[in-house]
Length: 371
Image 1 (spheres, rainbow, N blue to C red):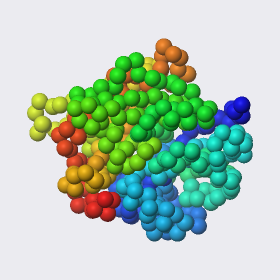
Image 2 (image 1 turned 60 degrees about the vertical axis):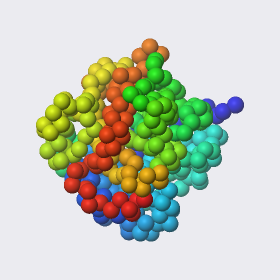
Image 3 (image 1 turned 30 degrees about the horizontal axis):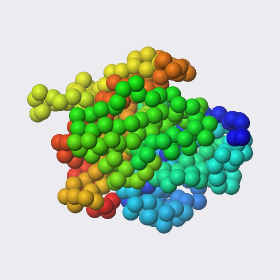
Image 4 (image 1 turned 90 degrees about the horizontal axis):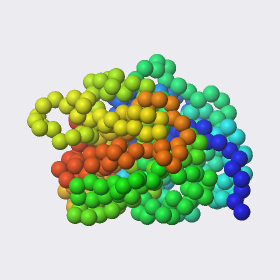
């Protein structure tokens, strides 16, 4: 019998990206509105590492010069590409209690106290029985987590959920259920694009929510399948981050030059892009919601076609119009039309062979480094 559920995930402590050059991506994230964490707070791994915040979202960047993680990051980049999610850490109030429970369900690293760029933490990592691109850690913060020194009203509240691309949905769903997650969304109808489809299921344990997606190829390969092929199994395709006022946020970000995926095919492609071109309107158990999706942060050279590049990680921006409540079977935490809208947006870009990035003036970025 599995150990009882004894800990409650509060939310996401931080996410870590493996990147080719910390300096380049610090500057790029700063254009999005991220702010650097005070370097004086860094732990022993100051070289090749940077910490940034965007309201409630805390990001760590590590590159191959990292004192502690250099060789591991170098291997990760070769296998999975630039600016892919290397790891994510879940915030808990009692790491020892979380370790005791999860060690009875899955192999865990020893519990230890560390000093990282965000401060001191008691933490451990899960050693998943399936091969995974992203790794999960759980942490109890022993001192205050840093926040932006000059927070802006349009900065995000935190992570709403992770969207994770997998080769086969069934074993991953079973694994998360074994970790104490409950299923909160299964589509009532097929998630169908014009040329392909996908299967999906969302699972939740407290403030830790994952949406698993598996590609179904038809006339064309599913964009989920190509993502897994380019970046690996159980790779985070995007994280959804919450905002209080998405329209105001989009006005700010579009003014900064941020590029978004289109919601619809425009009649006049040369006309300026407006909010209605990129924003999806949907609903779930908590009521109406708004969401949109950035273009990828980076792309990776296709292993099939050397002249093409596969889309990498991107952000979803979401505003829930009411506080979320616990989902029921009839009122699920995701909603078919909004999930379908995202899928078709990405499929449309792939069909049109869009090579855009989160900023239009990133063409000079050396893709060959992430090949």
